[in-house]
Length: 441
Image (tube, rainbow, N blue to C red; front, top):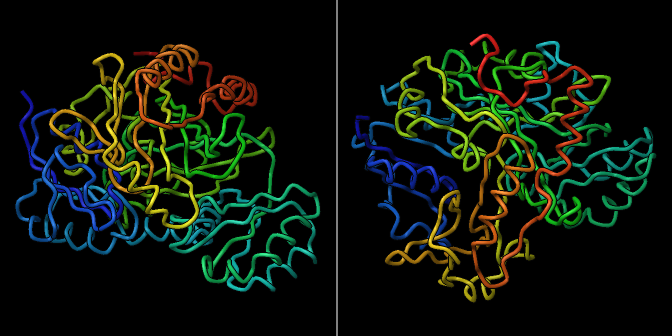
């Protein structure tokens, strides 16, 4: 029988409640802190929430920092002998400072796309006009975590549409995004490789995932951060070996323990790493829980202790579909709409919540209700031997959920079928790419 342990979660925006809920179902004790006062009812009824996480450090067997910008606190606690998942000064900088992340890759001899960081919009406009090309505009600094919807990809070959965007919006953008990156655009397949790091090495199998960042079916509409993901677990592959694995010495030096993900563009010519995520991803972690067979408390504890182990995961594919309600993606703090939907009951047509994972939800005597102000409510997941089977299960679970005016993408995983075939043809993925079991086992 697995030993029951005590987990303290520290969060800015009530992100990792689904992991905490999974732990409580396994019999572990959980305390959860987040500081967003507008979402104070999120997770009510699921587990204990605390007002000051520092008062509970001595209580915890494991402390989980679920977001960036906690590196300083995490390192101090590790130095004091606490078991900590997430956070280091180095991984914070990798994620928050895009240009630093690119420079670290270049130091390792990894090919990167030409990019420049700016803090002046007139200078950026002049740069694009002097060197016409297709570019991508990306917020940098702390804004890159909060304003991912403002990633802009130029469609014109000379970048003139991006020049117009920057010129027409520079007054607003100076206030919202003081630092930003202009990166050369390259056509290809967007794919990420990630793995849990125990302080010395990456834990296998690794995770390969394909995000669907735009809001509407057909990859249309605004950037969401992530509206759904297709993923699988793998022993290794060429993309991981040529990119993420090479950063192992720097991670060892930083003392980092947690999940690290590297998003890339891949085409027939090369691999182009774009950005690091030095924390759990959302809804990545919810979908990963669909594919991990081990007791969550056990593997998290092993990870926090720095042990070397192998995760037991499902072969095949996992799909996750994010379910939103208003005011998600509305302009500004639409508190009126948020209050309209707050406390609305989430109905399940069949009394079955398997594969349904929480975001901003609370438990009212067994009835789940919309909570907070984000409009990010649930993730429905499915696992199958192939992508169509995983999609069938995930969307069957979506249809079982009833929230007034809920919305979601209907095509998660569809484009990945032909993308996988191309990646195998180009030699980046083996034929058994979706297997976490070595061929000789």
